[in-house]
Image (cartoon, rainbow over all chains, first blue to last red):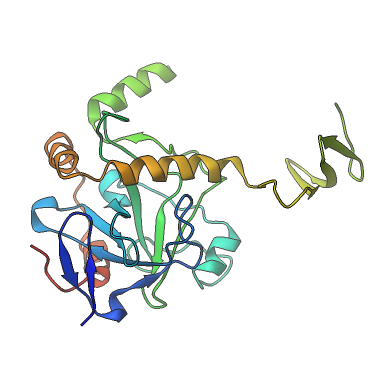
Length: 159
Length: 92
């Protein structure tokens, strides 16, 4: 069984059919075409999207509905085609596609954690294919605050 | 500057032509040297966010994230689909 070196969890065995193909990579990491999804019970509901070719490339993912239970997708036709989903119909989150958002976990650059609700990671499990869909016709934030007090500040700033 | 469909303008060596105007949407044609990267602004924003997100993946940040955030409960069907994607090998 092949092994990968992961960023957070040491060496991990994986089977090739657990690898999801990202034909275009994701912006900033266009050369990364294969990812596995990892989880740890202690980190629930977070998931980790680890590149199979670069140990240092790993993202923290959150199922989008764990960030916003009312989240609605507005995918462009080209995104549906890239996912090999039928045209003209938005896929159902959790039924047709896995939809998760990239989390910025904090640290010096961005002390308060945020999630990119504008550009979710979408995976068609039947086809083992994934994309990061940048939704141009969506009003979601690419820096959605994950801590409630930050959200209140944001709302106050809007009123 | 005001342009109609079929008219163009230049930014340095880059030519931009308004091909089609349809309601609120505008279709543009761009002629530029190979060295000029042409992308939507949202792609650039997403790239910067992704790089910051990847840098933030550190054990101490993950721990503080889990302490700070109360996540919404996830529906069982979503959980099942998520489980289907997860590498079955348990990592410790």
